[in-house]
Length: 124
Image (cartoon, rainbow, N blue to C red; front, side, top):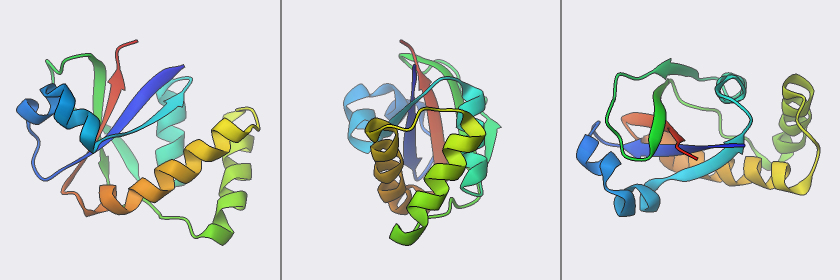
């Protein structure tokens, strides 16, 4: 599994991204099998993943930004989204998977307010 950190930033700043304490306070992390799954996840939420030119970020293999606002799911939409996600991704139906979707969905309110929505692929 690969951990992907979603980080809301007012401005793109390597200083903030390289401050692990600050980064940990700002981020929401999900675990997926690949960057293709990440791209699918973002697409299902109505956004687009754009490869970033940010380099030299500590403990990070790759970085992206998200264009557009991501759809915040209402409680009544979560089950349908979850079933769609499982169908398209081939991931397993389990409580960890469902909780990950709920947790990120709650975080999207904060993420969507940010001028820069950054996603980092953390080094294992």
